[in-house]
Length: 235
Length: 80
Image (cartoon, rainbow over all chains, first blue to last red):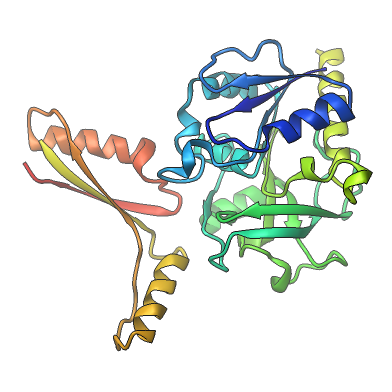
């Protein structure tokens, strides 16, 4: 399947995502430069982590208005798969493709460590290879991952079943001590109503090979690749 | 025309930077500092026919880029 990884100035997880898609999963992966305006036939588009535009103004704020994002928006609106990881999630929020906003971590520190997240939904193109309630160990590396929104908006998000991942204890329990950045309702990843756009703070591309000591993230990419193929077959 | 736009975290949103600065002021012996909000300030030079038109354009800039209105409030001062 053709997969595109968007490169913004300051992206730094682009090669990791490309590696997983191309070399671990054997997909037809390509990089998409942010100044471009075409997705070149990509069915899955990934916005990788990093510090696009140096995080000037706010994380993701300037990248959200780059030329390539207009193409990503059209792709998302047409039901195409879009995955935003870390800074990519911030870009999706700033672009309004997902609801909410990011604040500085409650700890005021850049948090770089493993986090435990619970899979809340398995009926999305990205999570159908996990079990509902499954606990994943995924690395996080961010200073602004403290998910916020108004209470009404959070209620609306929950009612639409938009929360895909929550920070939990290793046993899968909601516990404020394990909410690594202080996110509202321990939210680590959200999707849009159609389920084709996913944003998440943890980095599945950093734990997709056993040789790295953790392959909990691989099933997410396997699912996305399958989901896109299935979409094409039913289209 | 010159203008100043300030952007602050909304009151109901936790402002970890402001809290850290308030705590540091307390440690330095500045007593009675009850609250600090840390924000951003933009000095903007723009073309406009009137102050009203400048304010209108600045509002659009805030809504579209300068502020994230989910978590931030903004205020506009047209300096003339």
